[in-house]
Length: 81
Ligand SMILES: [Zn+2]
Image (cartoon, rainbow, N blue to C red):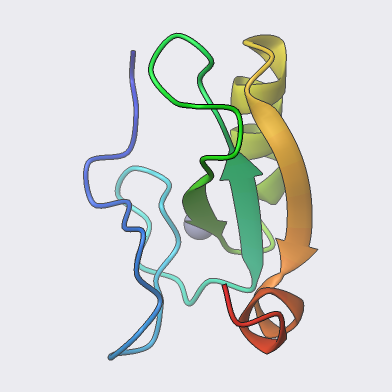
C-alpha cells in the first residue's frame, strides 16, 4: 500500500503537516480511517491533509473502504481524541 510514511497518530507538538507524499503544507483536515484487516473496529488511524490533498487522500482511503471520517483539524483537536 502506498501509504504516507510520515503519517502520525499524534497531533501534539509542532504544527501538523499534510500526510501526502512530499507535501510540507500545514494540515487543516484530519482523515480518520480503519483497516478492518489490521485494526479492531474502534481503532482510528489518522492522516492529516492540507486543502489541496484532502480529496486525493480521502479518495485513496475511500476506494479501499477504510475511510471513516473527515473533519477539520480544529474539530478533531476540540474533540480531544
Ligand atoms: Zn498536502
